Image (cartoon, rainbow, N blue to C red; front, side, top):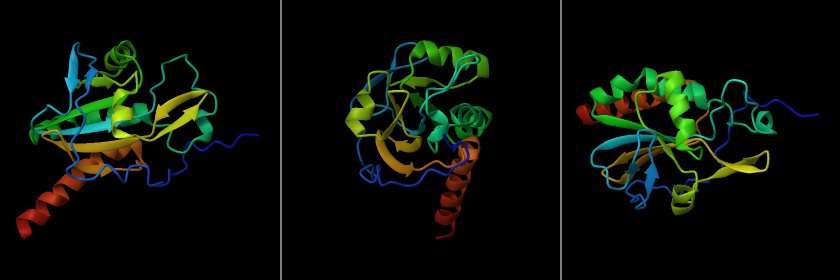
Amino acid sequence: MTTDTRNATPQDDGAVRHLVPGLELPDVALPSSRGGTVNLSARRGVSVVYLYPWTGRPGVADPAGWDDIPGAHGSTPETEGFRDHYLKFRAQRIEVFGVSTQTSEHHRELISRLAVPFALLSDEHFTLKEALQLPTFEAGGAPYLKRLTLLVRDGHVSHVFYPVDRPASHAREILDWLDEKRRAVASS
């Protein structure tokens, strides 16, 4: 008998404690759903880079054991949240990128189906995962990235959100966090 853990809160297992503010991102070019590649280490300005395990497709079953893994579910609602708040990020001159190990072809289908206005990047060959020692979990005999978000400024980690326990409201959570930081700076 399996236990459905779709609503179970993922625990902070310390798997990202090495992703400290100031850490330089690796020189890795990832295929973009918009064509070409994006090298996050070379981007100037601020980016929100949310890493997620897997987005399903209508009529395609989740990988075996998916329901047993806290934090596995929620990639589609998380992407929809970033889509819905995208203009609020852009108003602050922040670009948004989603990253998973799915192919760019899969990402293009998702973008079309959900009207996603930003690029999704493919780490299909686990290049970024290996370079940053990103945490993973296994389902159905395959590895998947654990859900986390990097706030990146000029190619360096500025902040890490991990674990992400409410994917559907995560974009709003980041906007609230940014507002709080701005208020703290203004009042000091």
